[in-house]
Image 1 (tube, rainbow, N blue to C red):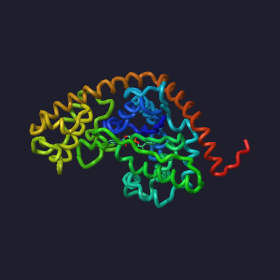
Image 2 (image 1 turned 90 degrees about the vertical axis):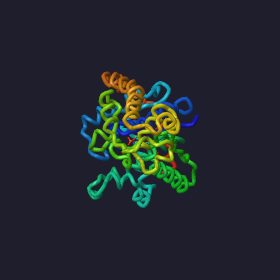
Image 3 (image 1 turned 180 degrees about the vertical axis):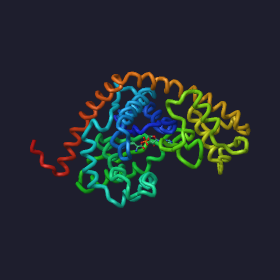
Image 4 (image 1 turned 30 degrees about the vertical axis):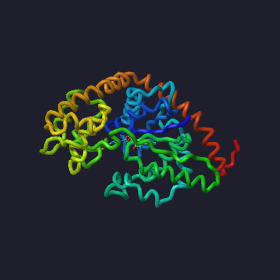
Length: 333
Ligand code: TYM
């Protein structure tokens, strides 16, 4: 069976973009693939994380996977730090990836900003650890949001260079799975910016634990323009906020943006915002409630992560042993 790997960082503020762009798809793929879903705590610490918050956020991401419907008996859910082979393979890949490749990564440039000299070395090699995550299991498919495309290209480059350098087809060339209406959800405050965990404004995003009142308030305050809703998707041109809200509705309702406009095109934003609020509460409410229920039982969540780490480790060890042998590490134990 084809194998999937994907990861989510436990950095707090898990939002609608993470859900619609990635986590909801994780659950939808589980009948057709063998899936490995990882809470990437080692990626999280590439920027400062409060230790207690990191632990709580690791449980929160795990709860989101479960609440979204991923079955931990059939598939693997674990946190990255518990399978040391990720770090071990990352070192080898640090010696395969080229500085020139890393210098092209737009996410590093965005995250490091003007203070590049002050960014951690870990943030720079973040995509190399990502390649290790995926290739440690020889995964073939990776469901992610649009923003991870460039990182997956680097994963393909690492696999290709490793295979070439050693003259062996050790790694598959992975395929990104970027699908659904909302592969790039934008900020509610600025339709030209991605919805993100790190935006200083809470009003820029709907988080997975927002209740009906918070959802209603954030949608009410969401930026729009003075015109009525466009009649067709061509009308999205130059209207990023309208495009974003309609796309979010389409994704939540599992219909196309054209179908949304069929119903609401030409109407005022105020009416549409009420419909969007109802839709968001209907679709996100049960997920948020299930998350709260799971997070109230940390021992249960930790048990799932422990079981997942053991099963992930069992898959990873023989693959890492093969890689060590190919690289030429002398096995004396
Ligand atoms: P993270 O935690 O930043 O994002 C988790 C997932 O959410 C998607 N996403 C979005 N999708 C649509 N609209 C948005 N506004 C939006 N914001 C985030 C991301 O594309 C991602 O799929 N680097 C990864 C974590 C990772 C990983 C991996 C992924 C580490 N190792 C191996 C795949 C395979 C990340 O961005 O996480």
